Length: 302
Image (tube, rainbow, N blue to C red; front, top):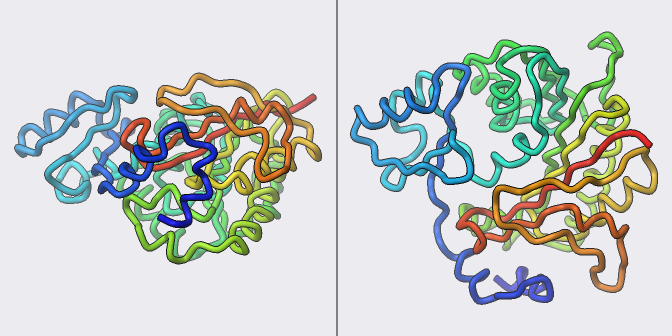
């Protein structure tokens, strides 16, 4: 937990934070509304005597306190998908509508991609991009199991994403769930802290800024971009937003978080950020018994 000590100045209750980070993360499944509604999925779980608990803030999420997500036939048949609770937030904030063009700029292995497809009712177009071919194989497998048909997949570095294969038309909305130092996943992957280094944080922040800039550029005026990470590091969160706000035509906008959250921080280790980064939301593990997360919503255009 030594790495996490650097964030004590941001915490009102560091003891609760550390205690939550040491607890195992609850198993969660999301109902895939392309194939089944919540009531049908719940009935299937009950028929199999699988203990499940509804997640209050999201009607399509269930906790499975006694089993793992993939250990049941509703999962195999694509009615359910294992997805960490807090990671279901960005797609909800993006709020894609049926018939829209959506870009998932760091898509594999596809939990958020398939959630986006379900929110669009499997209509319009969802473009999923990732540069890791192995992870794209997992995305394809998940999409097939879940019955997604409005999906196009591109194997490329999203910082160089081209609109030419898609009629050169900009997207209505884009999601950048960026690769990061993953500090917020410590509850399911304690080893992540052993691999942590400030050099990696600073290096990945350059990539994150490039991904977010391209997402803003590829989204139409009046469109929406959501930026998220599973790290606590301001270098990868508010600093990235600050950098992009100064270079692209966009602005941060407030949003209502269904999860308890803290505002973005406007200063870190002597560096000040654009005051609007307070509109972002920081979700710490002890707030909602989830993993750690960061989420921000941007409106594209002047």
